[in-house]
Length: 140
Picture 1 (cartoon, helix red, strand yellow):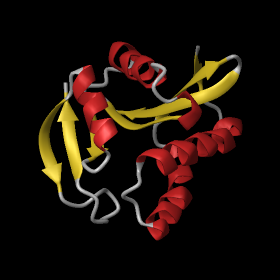
Picture 2 (picture 1 turned 90 degrees about the horizontal axis):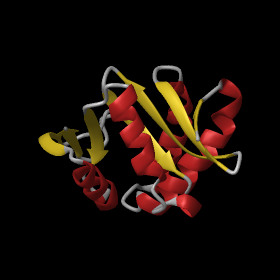
Picture 3 (picture 1 turned 180 degrees about the vertical axis):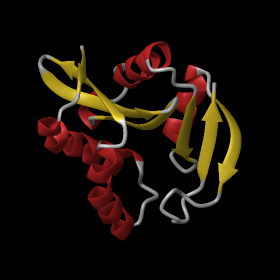
Picture 4 (picture 1 turned 90 degrees about the vertical axis):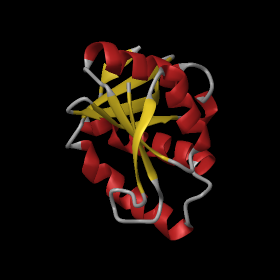
């Protein structure tokens, strides 16, 4: 079930974020993981946040801004069960999402977005924080 995220949900969002990133972003240096962990909550207020609940437990979420899927994270225990796909399909159908930026080194995510129908249109050598993690800019 889709829900609109409230500030009270932020601690759970961070649990989901950490669970997902630790298991999918094995290319991140430890100090960068800690840096992003500190930064992520500051991004929440700049995006429309939608969560996905299963058995009344928040298990995934996404952040959208101006047609761009800014973030998508699913609790590692629920990965591979279709939650990410449901969130992205909801974003495309209801929030006019047509673009996503994804770490090139996150092979699973790149494959997931290609499966949904996104195609790489550009690449940046540095991420939005100026760190050396190449970003693929993808579009439907």
